[in-house]
Length: 78
Image 1 (cartoon, helix red, strand yellow):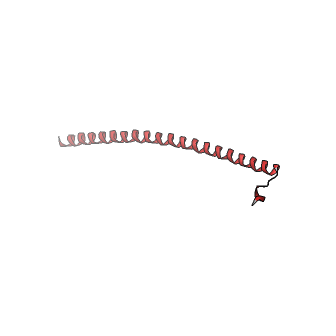
Image 2 (image 1 turned 45 degrees about the vertical axis):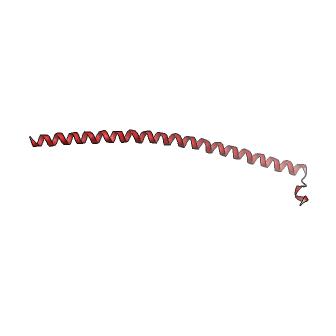
């Protein structure tokens, strides 16, 4: 078991450098994930705003259609 811990300085430095590189890659990946998460949140908020606007426009169009139908019905009855 002791043989596993007997590394030369070069081996130890090499392993340490590799671990530093891995840690740097993890940080970059986490930053990428955080950026994508923020962008996704912004897109979802934008979609939510668009959906509310479209729902309002649909309701307005439906009201106008009902009014037009009522006017047309009233005109045909006269």
